[in-house]
Length: 129
Image 1 (cartoon, one colour):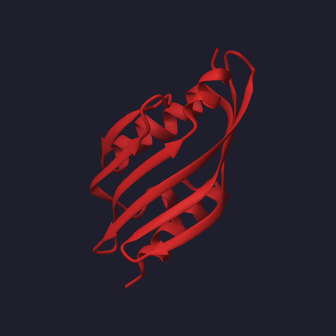
Image 2 (cartoon, helix red, strand yellow; image 1 turned 90 degrees about the vertical axis):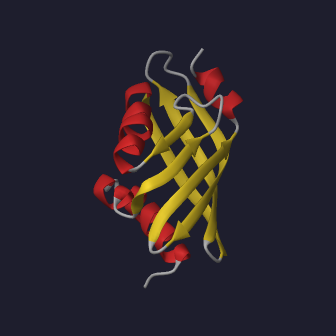
């Protein structure tokens, strides 16, 4: 069985390839995915389809360009921490932003069960005004 670290790394590798199926593959049906309050798609979503609709599709609707670049991936057993940067350009304003971000993942029984995002929501909000 793959480790939590390997499962989360596979998600980030799929993101790098722009492979949505790969990004969703290891998200459990009961996964609680939380986007930070103040972020455009803030909230907690349960399961891969809710994450796809309310996070990935929503970001694509809001931003012309939206990227995440992983800087470091930390192995904490069943928890994994991803540290990196968001960058994007808001569709309506044309303003770009960059923001540092931390993702905290919880993995159990070979599936992603929990995700929580911590980021500088002010940088994103400034691009949207």
